[in-house]
Length: 434
Image 1: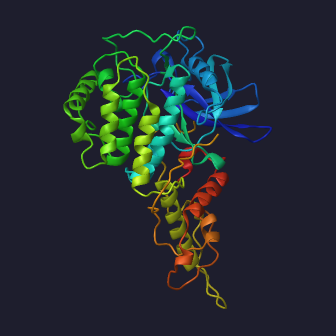
Image 2: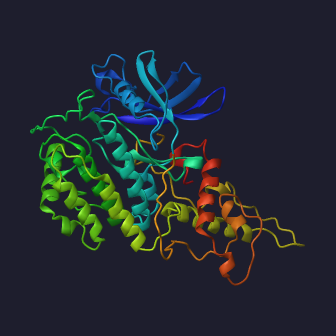
Image 3: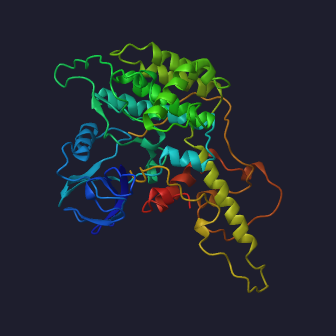
């Protein structure tokens, strides 16, 4: 079980993420190996980072036979420098524990998916798909498979990187080709399922050794999950995990691609058909897959503005809060004893989501020749100054009929999102919505 928490550099006040690995908890509620559940662990890092971390159990013991965190740190170092890859600040042994310190990132796509009502617009899905494909392509180019592609393992950045998608959690990553000869790993069968069953490829369910095609198929399921709101094999009940995995496999294999992608653009079915056509050791044509979605983006007339659904939703909620706050202010020349609402920054936001364990954990831009701009902007008659300060309590309000000049522009929404994230940079990612 992995947990990510924040830590602060006591000299610079910089916030980073600290990853720990907790052992499996038994049915009785105790941790395997006698670890104490619910203990507060104070990690003393040799680079002046303080991390007081409430966790379910101890982090990874240095005596473990296969230290996952140290292996993951090795993969991060190999991937270092790539866009959308978090930097390692420190990794090593603290007393009896292994610890990994990473850049602090924003919320996961799973968190944002829940925040947006468990469905993303086609525009947001296509913008995400472009970056997610690029991340996977980069990992593959470095000789590794991720093997656990899921929404929880894609995080948005913070501050100026608020629109950049990051790929994290390389604990299950595996080298698929030899470092020297670049020879591909051999085809094998009867392998146990590695990764998350909901998004696992059909071949992975069937016990076939994973290769590059499987990461891409898993991404396809993630994109459909975002579009549809759920996948047909979710919610299946079974007495044991193995039986549940078997049910998921049966349902997944029995669902034709055309049925799975019904009512969605044909490009998604084409994506799956291409993934299924790949041989075990074949190099995917990542450019072809990105062009599929980029051409669809252009045909839909979307504007490449990096304004995602959650940007708009948060702006709308902030605007609504500001309107409510302004209506409570006394009219000029009059006095009022009415108490103004407290903690205005937290009003109108979704509750904290705890579904993801990844709470912390050159820029990418989609350069399309867009036609008509299909922007998901609500009918808010607020000026640019109001938008760029959407997270601040309102001090005034202009009454009157809406005018075209007062409609927010997409670049204003993007700027508002960046300004918001700059202010929230020192806040844990699961609190960003409050």
